Image (cartoon, rainbow, N blue to C red):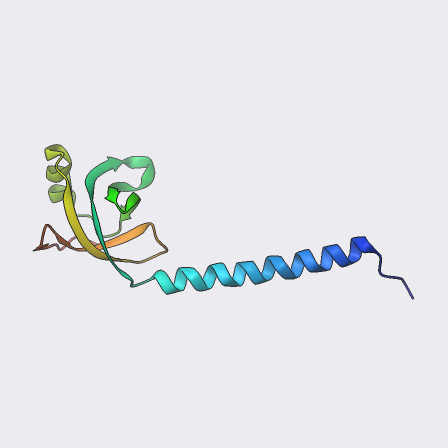
Length: 110
């Protein structure tokens, strides 16, 4: 019977750790879905990122807008003003479904 050497043990432990971390990462993404969030920031546009997104100041970051109303978002982008957006995460922490902008109901396309 073949003996287990240090290389085999390290390989098995690495594989176990990898699968455990993947499982934890998937669990974290699922926990974020539906989580309510309020973001203060500006509306920006970049085709390579899928269209309109929020350049967050508080909390900082880039949030892709899932339900984009191109006409309204373009007007907000041109105005360049900072807005307060209320919504929830859909896929992880960077995809945002907007419910309100500056306290007003928002209905975009999904």
